[in-house]
Image (cartoon, rainbow, N blue to C red; front, side, top):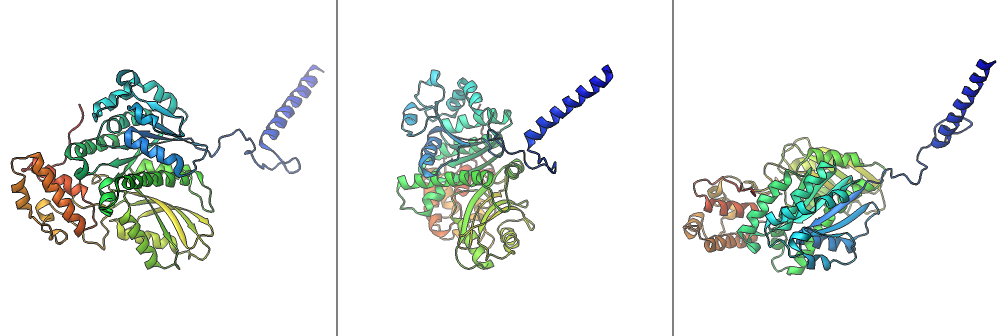
Length: 457
């Protein structure tokens, strides 16, 4: 009898557990088929926690712009971090503001010294660590070349990656012509340091903004830079958060950044009737006009693309896209992962991420964004100045070398300014790598292929 009672009690307990399980996963009582386990409104499924850190003066300016530029989802949080108290106080409508190095610097700023920027993070490391907990992806936004952005950004990236956070940097690169050699050299050094501390990085060029329209006002140039960074972040956030008929997901974005250290982000829109030539023209135009300044000549091209298309766009569009990007890069078989949403747009509206050439993302002999149907400029510095794209320069390389003999900074500045002005009227190609190489060759006349390698000690 005791054994029978134990067996009955055991069956009752099993039935109770089964009933609890059935309730949790919403089992249909008639068929016992699983219906859904997505009915818990407290779950954070599919809502990935995104944080955007604007670091230093330029980074905080972008954050200030982002607040009003678009509406951000609840899973996206913006933060402004700086060593300058007065700069932080100017930011309106943001509660997540943080003064780096508060005790040591007392809000005085970094004085343009990257070492001070780096040390300011060490004082604040516990607070930053706590803020970054429970984060899936961190965007680091900063201007390089001075103190806080250059020095603090790599240290914050280290903390993020130690927590297993996908870390992506979008940085603003200074104009050597507008801000001088020391600032530009600091930016080069900081870029290389930061590149080693993040999963992926891209840069926006101030020179490309200025040379696109030399009459542009200072205020409007800054707005263009802020807008470009906002678009890059917005493109990535949309890929993560937006659902579509054919979907991109967070894993797609993670895999892209884990496998591509340097990248470019872009957009294009085709409103007219679809054709291969029209699509190619608009993509080429938008890449050349972009302020995102990376070398796209890579033999391992990876593309991640969000496509909004109407129902009249032919199914050959993805095949056409691969062929177009094959012509832009050195890769004869680029990889394309895409999401597609059928909407009421007039034709095609798209955003994309594209891998860039990591080895030549700073000082490169082939200017970035040089499309194959344009004339490429390659070779050492003497060959560059005999290339047809530069025959209209007022002074030859020999005259420039004579002008800069003795390595006087005033002469270096004068020579590079003249190169920038002349090149701006003769070519749309990127100039910052050329200018940097000119300066470096003047400083190192026996080594024309040397690159800046100084690190902070």
